[in-house]
Length: 189
Image (cartoon, rainbow, N blue to C red; front, side):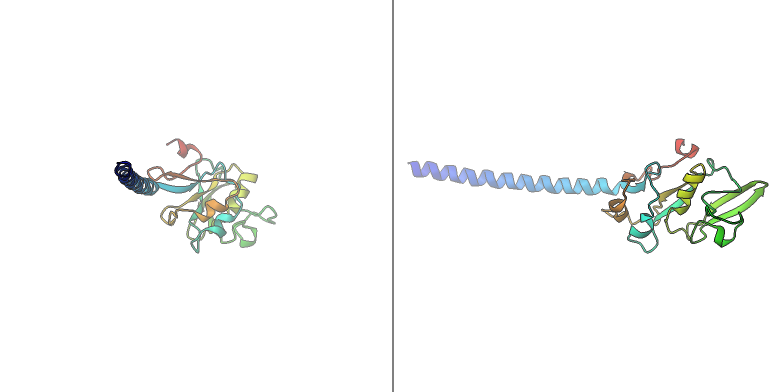
């Protein structure tokens, strides 16, 4: 009689174990599916308030030309003749000559408005994401230039190589419905 009771207990044990394993497998699968759905609703973005202009956005992106680009908060810009984001600190003259420009690719275009004001425009196709202009604008200007992940270029990698390398931990996942972290008056919109 003890053998029958042991067999029943053993049979119950195996049945319960199988049910538990099945429940864990289903729960794990549901968790993975939920995580993938949530990940699709999130995109990578660079917080301009944490960015230290380290130049890694230009070199660490998996794309040949980084998805991180300089953007300009026009409402913050002073439109100065001497723009810290446009001119090299050691510029001899403050004109548009290449040797006086801070950007290595000429991605910032300067247009005369009226004396002493100029408008500055970023040519994103030329921007490599080096952040030299952002560093200059933050050091010698009002910080109207800043870096952002451009989602029309970004692959939204599961593990962003730039985010891993970022010394300031400025990269974060944000909802795809609000993919940009902005500076200036436009940030309140």
